[in-house]
Amino acid sequence: MNSKQVLADAIAQKAVRLERCVARAREELNASTDFRHDHTRQDAAILNVQRACELAIDMGNMVIAHEAWGLPQGAREMFAILARQGLIDDAMSTGLQNMVGFRNVAVHEYDVLDLGIAERVIRHELDALLRFAGLLMQRCLNNR
Image 1: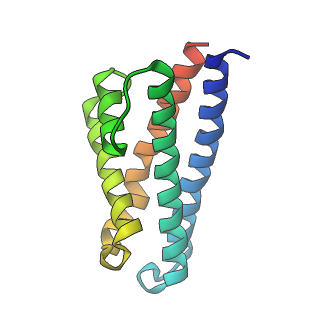
Image 2: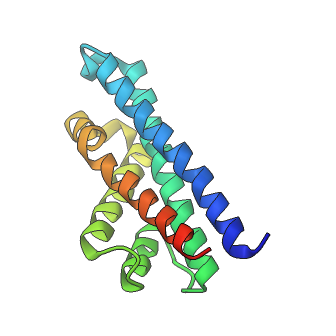
């Protein structure tokens, strides 16, 4: 198996897991009649958002390493590199960098997490992660 095939397989596996995490986050949000007071559902939803973000970061780093585009100093820079290389547009890069910021707050400052923002992210912003995974999968399929 060549390196392009290995990359394509790894990206595909992570994309499936990312899709599952997005679906689970949305299930938890929608399953609660009072999400803002249901701490168990909040925790489950936010954990799946974190996992989805991590999977997208892993996928991007894998592509950058495979293409030898440099060594990002962090997740935000990784998305910026992908934009500079033309893999994603600037708007997607900015949105994904903002998602990293949300993930950082969720991980390191959970006690100040704004649930209104969390709900908006789960309902609307996670679509950017799905689009990103789709773009990477398409790229891998085209480069086999």
